[in-house]
Image (tube, rainbow, N blue to C red):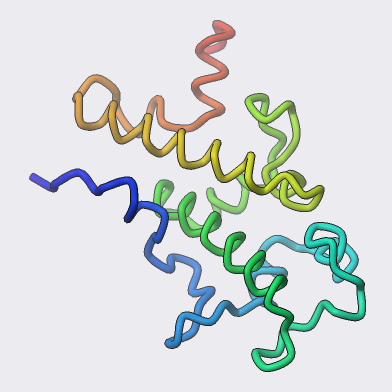
Length: 155
C-alpha cells in the first residue's frame, strides 16, 4: 500500500512533460509550445515587455523563468493525475465550468495562474482523499468536469 504523499511534496511533481533539463532549469520554449502561446501571450501573462520575452537560459529574465516554472509545474501536476499527455493538454484547452467557463490555458494567459494553481491543488487533494477513503473510483469521478456534470444531473 502506498503512503499518502505530504501536501508539501505534491507541489513538486514528476516531470511528466520533460519541461526541465538535468539542472532543473525550465525549457521555456517547450512550455510555451505546449500551451500554444505566442510571444505576445507570454508578455501579457507575465507583465513583461515583449522584447524581454527570451527563452535562452542565460538571457531569460528571472521573472519569466519563475512564471514558466510555475506553468510547467501546473502542466506536470495535471499530467501526473491523468497519466496521459493528450488528456492533460485537452484539459488545459477546454473551457471549465468550475473556472467560470474559461480554459485553464486562458486563465494563465490572462494572469490568473495563482487561482488556477489553487484549483488544481484542491482538486488533487480531494481526489486523493477520496481514493484513500476508497469511496470513489478515480476514473469515474476524478475530473472537475465529471463533478460538474454529476451536480447538474447529467450522466
